[in-house]
Length: 199
Ligand code: HEC
Image (tube, rainbow, N blue to C red; front, side, top):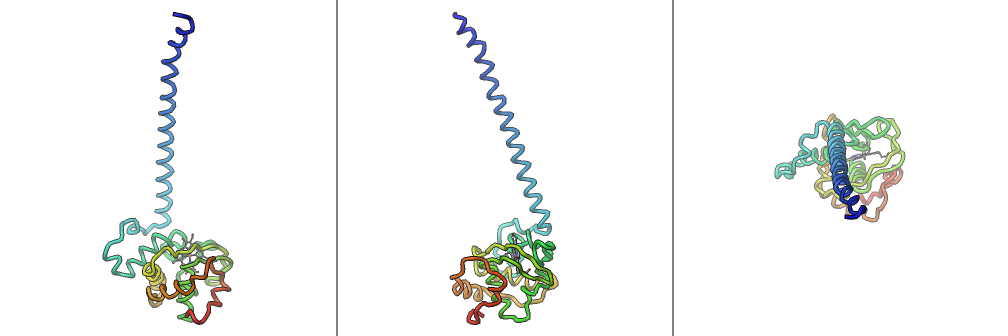
């Protein structure tokens, strides 16, 4: 046996043992980190949406047949993270929906058209809600179906202290077809000028 081969025999068992050992410790740490990150995210989301116990359950036939129930579920799954389950939003960040002039405007037909338009394409730039200016970005929700958009709008118009009439899936369908030219989120100014033919 040469000196070289003795050395190799001595070294190889220890180096073969070291790699898997550190590898397994590393993997274990990685799994712990992933687990902690995942659960803390879920926890953060859950506390934002504190009253959201039903939003994690699959939609049932009764949700689909009851627009208010469907509306609440769509709201809790998509909107409450910013506008909060109370509909009060977060001051200077996310505007309130309760008593908002956008949700319950005096010009009924114009308000309904604006609401559907906001949901289909989003809203950006300065906008005044209950006397405060917000300057944020609301994403579009055009991946939701006509029935889901109608349900969530009917929900925000009648939940909390709001008392507005429901929005129908037919109204959403009509506007989806007729403002399909739109690409970007609306600005306040553009919404004010929505053509009469759409109302
Ligand atoms: C990522 C945060 C976020 C989510 C999620 C979100 N919004 Fe908004 N929403 C905003 C912001 C920010 C504005 C104001 C945009 C601006 O400043 O131009 C706004 C504005 C509005 C307005 C008009 C202003 C008001 O307060 O009445 C309505 C109505 C509205 N959102 C409804 C909804 C509905 C319904 C959903 C769920 C389908 C939703 N939003 C989801 C952030 C969000």
